[in-house]
Length: 291
Image 1 (spheres, rainbow, N blue to C red):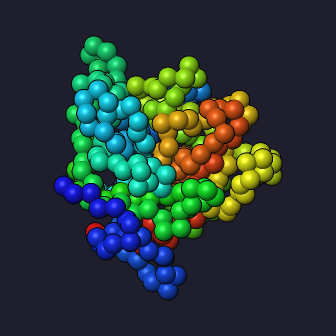
Image 2: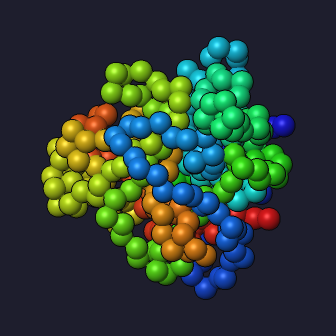
């Protein structure tokens, strides 16, 4: 399967501006974000099936090297994965997307032991039909750090592969949780890549204090961004780029909703991190999806 990159050529997936006068079809499922909140400690291991929307964006398929460098993303419907624009640069082109992963390198991912043991079906790898990177993405300003990956075929949902919810309603778009959950396989506090999917609770940061440390780097906190995390607190880290920031919210019952995409930070748990504000980009997401 050829991989078509959004480089200005028309492969049917070129990024476009959202037209406020256009009503785009809703291609996002209502049956999404199935989640049972559990007690979470800093950097704790996620259960198998807990974050069934997690995707690994792979750049290498050579045995033994395919997980040396990767980004993450989230499955948002049967054909699309949401991730960061910096994960799909022309110099860093993904070639596969893996769904249903929990423990990298394990043949079977299981919860429990003995009679209580429950195992997930095998992981699935998908090819990439095309990539839609935001047309205004700027590595220098770090703005518009969002992209969509269209998979080469429809995803069959299973217990370990499910779509996440996005803030599709007005109430969700304006919702400001008191805390969020991040998940990923990033570098741990021991500076090692985790083989197991991890989760952590993070707290929104005051925008004024967040802007103070951004001033040092010459960046400005934009309405299209969220600032989350505490000094020396739990944080998204290397390897978590493109991953989700979310929490459970009321949408067709209690569902896990993605409010942010891991964008960048100043270090692992040292200062707050910046996330792309998903609610801000909902018109763009809808405009750039097709059946």
